[in-house]
Image (tube, rainbow, N blue to C red; front, top):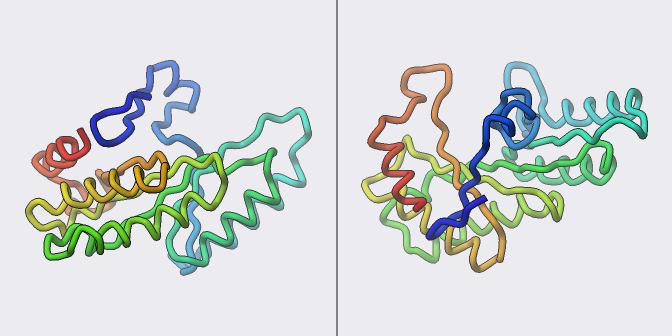
Length: 193
């Protein structure tokens, strides 16, 4: 882990990536939401996973690192309950949240933007004292200089709360429009360093 000018950047070796099953994720992700998607209730899935792990794990089994994507306030309570029930057999090691789209609006004052970031950062960090927090910057609706303003708010909030917060840029999906342009990725990288 290397501390850059404003945010923490984590570098992985090929050995690190291989040890994670060739995954670049910091943990195994299980979506958690207070909504349904495709007939699948994510909060219910986390409870189902807890039941399966309780029934099949032995004390000799290594702990499962779990990453959770928070999507709604109810998800925080579900993630906290899962962590409390399953730790140390399974531990939520990473929490990802999606910043509200207005954080990239340049019309917002810095204090309003930081307040929006602070609420999500506090909720994500409350899942477990050792959870890594990653907050996704909504690039699709960003105004010029909006990504830089959002990353500034992340860095300021991390300093105020004395948390390590990773900035995340979603770089793909199912549709061509889900992939940011090289210019957007470059803007994000420059904002982070």
